Image: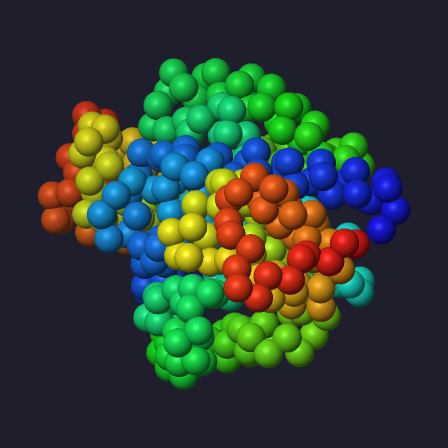
Length: 209
Length: 209
């Protein structure tokens, strides 16, 4: 190992230890058994696993490895910016600026070539500029929905989220995976049947597909 | 989506929700800031991130995507078999049989082709039969060490683990990454200097490399 390599390794380990704090960023949603709220590190693992297992349901054929790489790093910015709840409109409005500053700082901890590469991957995810990014974004949203359903809708009720909002927010899943969007609609109808959330003021019935 | 596809998706989501229990498998080691013990889901995410960031330090050139896929699933068996502490000799002796039974059950939840493919990937990791598997195994062991060091050696002291044991158990890291093994020796010497663990009865000094 040359001295340059040792410097690279030191920077890389500093980065890894810094983003370990993602394990302390607590999301609104619960783990599947409802026992506690999920943190962003384990959420990111769930997405990686889902990308591996569900890739055949992407709208277009995807390079699975690229999707996995993307979801592993997609939420690193939350180390600084925190988790922004998908149903929090005010938070969503300021999210981009907060996350951009976080990305600049965090990816800046890495050797320059590597930081630029990973930040470009994050940009690709954020802007959905490839079929892999579009599928990754669909999996991200689907995972939140699936665990909310699995845990009996607890996070929806705690945050006064109604079915019409769930429908509106998750419709974007269709872009990367019509099959997963169809699954959302089936489970959303089921959640309404079970009384796990209220229809809401706008209350469009889920599409009967 | 054909009826066959719907059946596949149902099985795949059943699998994803079953292995979500990995978030409740608590390891002996702590997260980097020492605030609490780590669970296996977030540990798996750390390995995926490390594989992305540290691949250049592999002993031989590796297909990074293959390493990442492997570490995402490498500990799924702990859903049934629990975590076996790397310094628990009795546990290590029964580990293979417990984990094989777990693998047969868990991968059996997936569509047969996919279950066979992922179980083969797990076998590859377990037996270190490729350069990717050897690097993945090194990263797995290194991650445990790195977080123990970062959190001030708390898990070592709680489990009466001495420096000679740390040295012996982590020496295998050299197989997949001499650079990471050199880093272990630097940090182990530092931990001894700080009094974070005892030298131990056998007490070989860390190699001065």
